[in-house]
Image (cartoon, rainbow, N blue to C red):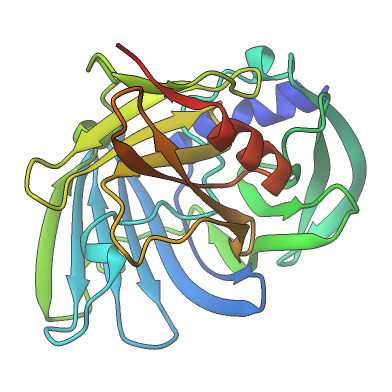
Length: 297
């Protein structure tokens, strides 16, 4: 099979197979471990993701419904934007389309969490994206490993199963919540809704294949507006805000493969706005996008 044929199996493999396991997620120098249970019932995906490090945190998924459980006295971004498992490369990715911008190669056959796996590498044709590697289970097509590397081949971020059992006989009890605490519920259809809002500012340059996927905004005195762009695998958001005295222009990496670039732009009327880009793209790409942001009439 070709790399694209193997990668095209990922989404269906997750919809057709249940599993229970443990994986590690390394971002830069930070390493966390998670327990995950993924079940299928009548075509609906159910999932429980639990952090095994630090404050106890748990995410439950029931189709498009998501529930976060956190300790009452602990704040976390999980109760604002619950993360997808890093072992989900992207849902409904058009792999044939994305090979216009990425070159896919089968590197080797290896073993991951005791299972035979096929290792595939994705290289950016225009050098404006990170290198990505995927370890795919040879039997089921499930994703066992994903890694992001810079152009020199240095690993920036890694998620990999250390233990996995595929299609166990009964997961009903394993999918039930194990924590008590602050509960926040979401509907993922809200996040996936395409952007339809007309914009009055935009970047004049984007890496090939990236398009606007979401718009959020606030209306209070601390106005912040954000546009999110994605190619199906990588994504970044550009935030526009009225800059305070603490707003600092910067460029650099946040954690793992995440970069942040900030600058101040000025309109023809002399209004100043702070622009901050945060996402999974190389610093030079982020700087070029942020530098191209302009206000529209």
